[in-house]
Amino acid sequence: MRLKRRYLITVVVGCFVSWNLLTYYMLTTKQQIKEPQTGKDQQQIETKLSRLEREITNQLKDNKDLLKDLLHLKKDISTATSPPPELHEDIPKADVLPILMFACNRVTVSRSLDQLLKYRPSGEKFPIIVTQDCGHQPTATVIKQYVEKHGVKHIQQPDLREISLPWPQRKFVGYYKIARHYKWALNQVFLVYNYSAVIIVEDDLDISPDFYEYFSATYPLLKEDPHLWCVSAWNDNGKANLVSDEPELLYRSDFFPGLGWMIERSLWLELGPKWPETFWDDWMRHPGQRQGRECIRPEICRTSTFGKKGVSNGLFYEKHLKYIKLNEKSVPFTKIDLSYLKKETYDKNFVKKVYDAPLMTVTEVVLAAKPELPAARVQYNNKNDFKAAAKKLGIMDDYKAGVPRSAYRGVVSFVFRGRRIYLAPPQTWKAYDPTWS
Image 1: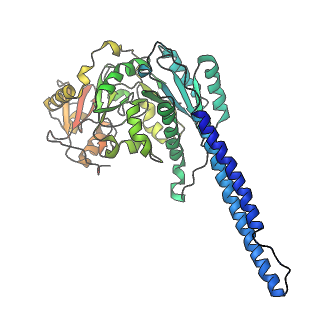
Image 2 (image 1 turned 30 degrees about the vertical axis):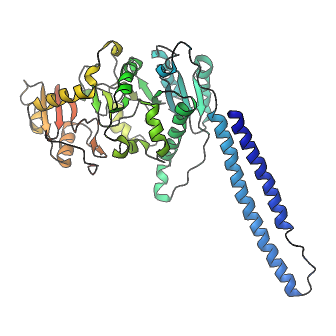
Image 3 (image 1 turned 90 degrees about the vertical axis):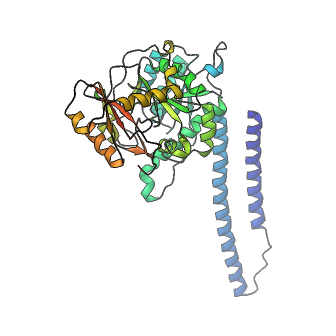
């Protein structure tokens, strides 16, 4: 199949060059020019020649651009058909969970790779693929060392063309490039290498010691539950003062968190063909993509980021990300019964736990009233109620497509000064309002 595709590209390029030469010949010999009889004839001929010269110049420019695109396509196909990481024959491919790391121009990619290798229980079950954009040679050199020493797979996004945007959007060009890179790399994993699932990380993430254990144990849930579409290592409200000391706690969430997440091939076959040009993560949170599906998330994050510099210029990092707590205690998730996370069981228990909790006001919670209560519920009735309460309690107050960060059924669960708090809508809540954004 690869030979046929390469042959086809060669034939197309050959035909194109031949056609280009023929066009030039036809244009320049289209008519025999007779000796001018008058000054008027001379002027008419000169005008025609000037027009013909312009047409040839424009045609050659168009042809040059077309040839550039064809050569780029040839390179893309050559890269796309590179062999997948070698697999141990004793492990079925359906049980393999490749780690796909996105990289660009950070030579500190070594920090993330060192941790992935340090905690990895099996190279056969968890092959590591580094997909690099940007064409940054110093970063590529660092990655090459891991290719040679540890068998890491290094693939490079071939489309490095600049993206032309109108002036108001130019500041977002980095987000366009990221979306383009994600689409290409996920196509490699699922359509070229044909994996059944993938764990996605970035080149600025630290991981917890039980990172692999967490994803190994939750993968069966992802496969079996049609209401789940991802497993994430991230809790958006995962600051040290907002989580309990219970690293084994896991939740269902309506909010897509990212920052270390796992999806199946079937989801990519659905999303890939309509992948957006930019802001892919917000796009995934839109009802049209989420379709009521949920993710698994932890109480304490299994990833944290050290990437202060990026397309967001470090603003979000300084205000929030650097305070996220990374789990340090290994939890043997594969030996724990996680059936409580199945939707029917989870929803019943979650709703009961939330709405059985005593109702308190934000002021009472802040002033530590009723200290005998280990858990309490704070109710919000509209968007402004939620934002006001969230700010006073120190959790993230924004919405994406109407869904608060880390929320499930409209409820955000967190810890405030040692007490479990459920910031919740009325029990009659039915659905999110996408206009709350």
